Length: 177
Image: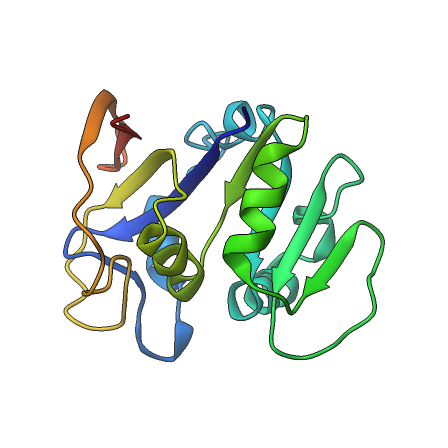
């Protein structure tokens, strides 16, 4: 069965964005030739689920080819109807139904790239199987929390931790069965 993986960066105090969806703190650990395992990770997936705000930010900063590279299906979770573009589908239905359907199909794994609303909806329904969280060495003090209150408790199993010379620490856990 396919698994759903979260691969995301957060500040040490648990924020994935500064106020106004500002992701500039990620630049603190940018280093030529270092992708923090992103390419290795994305080789294991063929489907991406992403919230509209995160999608729009990446579209503006990097371009659509970052997600829709012809190698994977992309589902942008949105409340607004939009026609599909390439292999990108703008999905308005129930997120949990989509993920359950995708998990029941054959294929590689499913990558959840945020944002917080999407992540927390999946957590509430116990639909994230693997957590790869890169901790950026900064305390932001404010912004969008990675994990919101009001979720059920979930036990995780430690897989590994990796440190990088930029100060980034990457934590890898899987959901305890």
